[in-house]
Image (cartoon, rainbow, N blue to C red):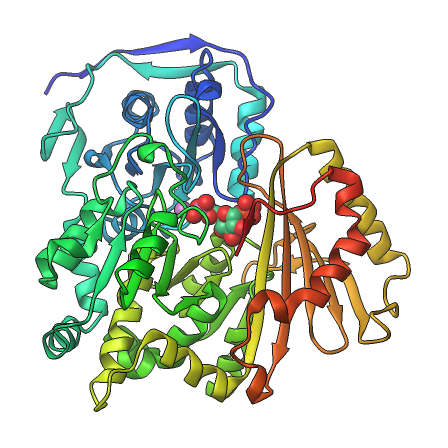
Length: 562
Ligand code: VG1
Ligand code: CO
């Protein structure tokens, strides 16, 4: 073996000041990443800050959602990584790995970490977004301690190391060797497929499909990374007709759309489901970690979705039949729907800040099985990321389970109705105000925060119908490592348990995004199936009044309502 398989150059650089990772990695416009050494600096900062024992002799998984600029960045990561001592890179074919698939591979290969190239549901293309996220050896997004070190390293960087190897051909499955360093190109899908087949009852789903030949399913990949995965699962594995998948060819610009599974951006799916009277409609986002479940007569709110999955899991889903439910969790703004399920099943429920990284420690400690976020994120301890297709198959598995003992067809809406009858309903809605002027948004937030601490508690609204019992900026102490995360969103709670939450997004790439979350509990039978916006109207009015959103931002209407 030759002593020097490649030569390493040290390149002088100077720091950028804005490389602070947000809720989920560093997300910026592609053109920001294209600046001189911008990407190189951040990648070097990741290797510099990589938790002990550091990059030397490490195994690192690399892949992304297929967006514009991804392949170029993967070449750089490999060249810089090898120069920093990485022993082996595991890369998805064509650079493709969905976020949950990458998490699975990191765990399975016992890698030291992974670098995920995605800006998730943000649009792609040269004028849109790119993102780089570091995941640790448990397969989950790096905790704040690590992202803080990456940011610190980026602020003082003066040089980076890079090798002179030629570009790697990611198209060919197999291994490329440089001395005792290896680049392994793997099938992007097969490990993930094996995993979901272990978790779910595919036989039950297949018999359900056979018994209900009129049942229609439509999975929309939104031109994102799950296209290939969706095809393998729904068409090749479950034998559904080709008409059951749409927009399942990954595109660098997601067809010019937001690859975001909600009622606004997944408009094509919504239209198809309504027009074709589809029983089960589903979509996932650009990087495959989000999901939406709808039918021609119902939209499953993500906060309810995780509650339903948690309720059925240990009866319907083989994985949880084995492991049981160790605990449940939700992010703070997510509705307390899952809390009621936890109470019923006598398991603990945790409330963590927004962002999947906060679930990881609880899962690693064996205290958490199923969790979710209101932002279309649902998942479990099978990996350390939220998992869009997992949630879709979970619903299909539950549908197959409830129908296995039933004469008449039980639909998604029927499942929800039964759930509300049993547990009551936590009405929930989120209003997003995107690309708002940052100064106005920050001022609105800080003034509302001052109000929260300055006498809002005890104030009544709408003739005494709502009285504030607590108002604070959410702070979280991790039960496992006791790290404290402050400033996680303003949470205003009323005497009837209703909540208003206000946050500024940590994933946007231009201006500010203001998020308002509304929640109200209802258990009167005649009110259970009313329209969400009607149910929440009083709370929405109160929120707009106390925040003075319009005065500060000029915004009247949200850009997206969930
Ligand atoms: C948003 C969601 C949050 C989610 C995050 C990453 O963050 O609110 O729940 O974990 O996106 O999801 P923010 O800070 O913009 O509210 V993904 O699919 O973009 O990785
Ligand atoms: Co995503």
